[in-house]
Length: 425
Image 1: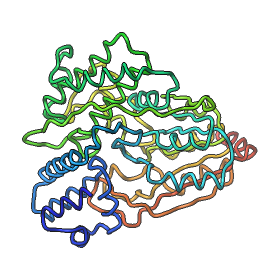
Image 2: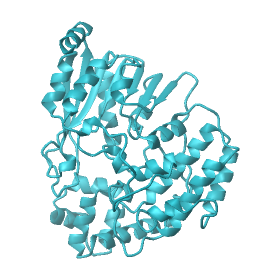
Image 3: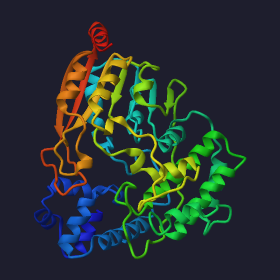
Image 4: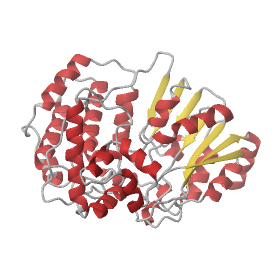
């Protein structure tokens, strides 16, 4: 409803915006149902053009309108964050029904490894179908989020509620040493919000009455709460340069998943190619970062907030020293992917891929092609390829109208795999 309401304030409607922007009506209807945090920058730019306003002003107007709509419905304070309530590149949430229908038809097994788990939404869905699920990602923030949502340890809800009340009443920092506000205030967050975020992080770190699970739940809640209002276009490679960054922060608790006694969840933070030789499962779900976007650099603010080692930051975007650099984002991606495929100890390999190889944005261009993926998979088994159109916007100027999502499903043939391994030795 947000897009439609915003257009109404400018005497416009979705049909008129469709004609002006070139976005399909189906895409606009989808955007109209999304929270503002999940909008792509291309939408803001198109709205700026049709309204004759500066892009940053459009974003501010939309944020105010969304806040008004939320206050009118009274739903915002009643809800908690679900696992999928975050901004993340490559989020597979919209493709889950299709992916799992293919898994049901073309695979068998009871254990599932999500070796590039990202937001964790694939693993969340996997728990509905498999009794043993393994999550892996090399970001520290994702590891904390997994432990908070997927952990099986008990936690004291009353204790957490007291912390929430305490955190929501904070107006400034007293224990924190100004690290967060000095580096991120009036950039990614308002000065006040940065002070409060830094203070909450310090209090979580110093708390003596929290179990490991309770600490992870509060820290994951802080990550989600901060990410929700960050002054960005969806990642932290840059912040929007505003004359005034408004105060918007509110600490909201996450809603941890309920894991039954019959289910087993394992959580790792390792290089996928190393972990592949150390664990086994029936099905491996593989969704690596195929393009040049280094996730550890795109989400560096959340990584700093999570680790809380307070490194020296540099550059306009205030980034820490580089770490966790993925080989899948380099020209070596085809060789690294082939190595992973050979190392996986599974019966089925399921790979997702999208055809943004020729995107105008260099950061969106894939480092591995459809043909290279298929060639690597064919070395270890018989592969089927499925595709469907999927609305997608890259960081460049062009809407990829011919964009498709692909799912490769390989039934591993152990004899063929052994021959492939011998050939590479």
